Image 1 (cartoon, rainbow, N blue to C red):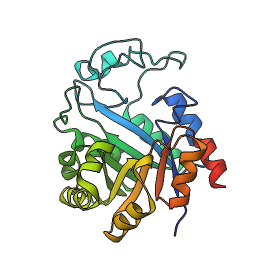
Image 2: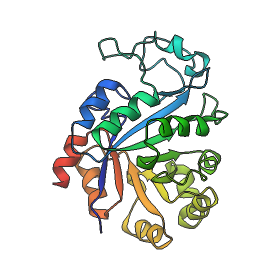
Image 3: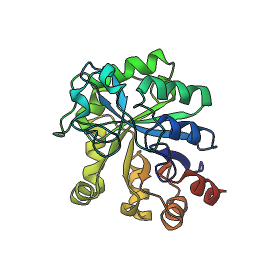
Image 4: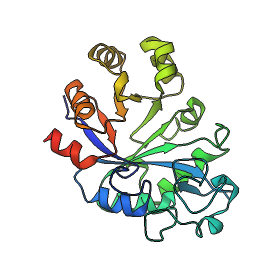
Length: 244
């Protein structure tokens, strides 16, 4: 079995301002295999790296990200970065390519939980321009978003993300069926939802297994003991030390 890969979640959110170029530069200097980040669309259709649909929590601005075009977003400053603006997907992809890492890209929904129109083609265009399609894992909580990407065969893979409540409601059989319906080859869950039985059942069904929320020694150790394919962690140096 291959060793568990480590993805720096939002660039390593425990250590540096999340989803910032500062965080990405620091994370990509580590031997973690993957860089995880989130994307929303600007008003003029530019894929922008940011976790929340609104700007309030991590920037000096307020309101929906999607209400501003790229030029306006250049004036927005990320807290704790010394004046950096939001990265574009193109900028983050270029940093990842130069570092020789895999990009773990989560496509987000808008402030109402709806997929952005044309978000998948927009992201794929950027990845192609940056020669990163073959080194990108695409993830989403929205099955329709993943289904839109099924024709992009050069991607590393598609990951269906599930929160704890829907996972517990549908169980392994339901999750496998949903993943297959949207072309996903991997399931992503909060680390606390996995046990050896669930991992074995998902692998038996042909799905990869990944997790997020492995942010301390106990949860990272749990993920490593289960032999998950990948963990997204806010503390990649700790995960690297524990993996050895």
